[in-house]
Amino acid sequence: MIIESKHFGYIEIPEEEIIRFPYGLYGFEDIKEYVLLGKVGDDNPFMWLHAVHNPDVCFVVIDPFVFKKDYSPSINEEVLHKLEVEDPTDIRFLSIVVIPQDVSKMTANLQGPIVINAKKNIAMQVILDDDKYTTRHYILEEMKKGA
Image (tube, rainbow, N blue to C red; front, side, top):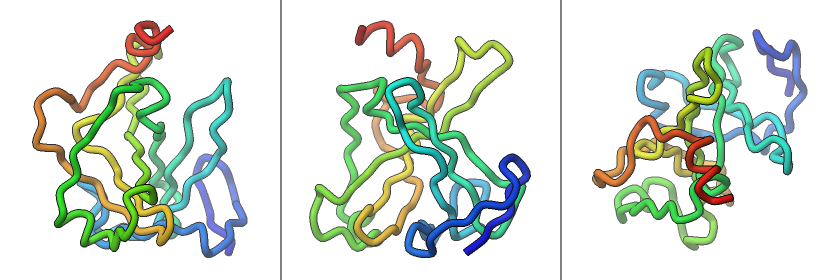
């Protein structure tokens, strides 16, 4: 399948890599299919969550465990059921990143992670009922702590 991207041009993606969001993302409820672009490497922990059918919608995302090793979001049974999770090891988390002009102040949303059933490619954004995580968690600051 070929998708069009405002940022990357035309990209060929295998149809089995499409991640379905039955409820969309907050603020983007009508967009139900995305694909992850980019591979995480030692020098680049970022990826792009790109809408399959909208060339303008693309989010920078990061695996929160890359910079916050002790991240432990609690996901309730209702969410697990909606995502058709049969084995908890199939769950993958992503956080949406905001990159301001001063990149040293980039943040990740740890309070509203994207939860993915990696086995079935079904996902949803979840708002955690836990005040230890914020929507603006400073990534580089946290990485310095872990170094």
